Image 1 (cartoon, helix red, strand yellow):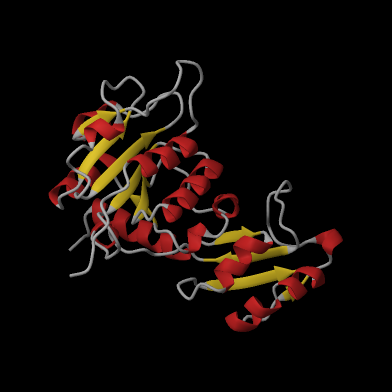
Image 2 (cartoon, rainbow, N blue to C red):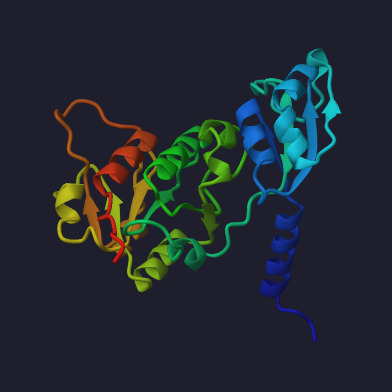
Length: 264
């Protein structure tokens, strides 16, 4: 019996994903990946100087590095990449399903960050850092029209990519509906919203909360707005200026921090 087209497409996408690799670069990003037992590491290229700085991490990883001349660094990186003499080829991290991260254990009421068409890897990297600092369970973005896991994102995340789940889903609106079925209260951040994030979360801080941020300029898509439980804005001291999406994520996470649970 001939396989349906959708089955073939799904199998091909799965095969392509399993073959995908990422080149991480920079001393910090490479060190954290070498020390991350969840990472599947394939190839390490370093200069002598970088090898000395990463000696402990390299030894712990069990990898045999390739030593490169700093004047002819052989890793296939973009010419503008600030690699500091270190590059590591890896496979993308597998954080499991949406339910795996949304229902994972942790202190306090769970918090998630959802990104609607945020494509700048530097912004996403900074958001991962804030998510880790404020204890979010995960950062979630669609597979398309979102920043993929790249060396630039990892460098901007300053190690957070190795510890903070970054999950890509097929459809963000469907993911929101799925999270609502798990008990999450979903808040979309929108500058024109009537209520502040503090007002929207009043009386709900003991609940799981997902914060949705859109791309700078267009903001949240209409479908995202439609399925969110509420829209909220960040209060500003004046009407002049605005925050970029990574700063807005940090402020929103702080404003939405949940009630801490206390042991019996």
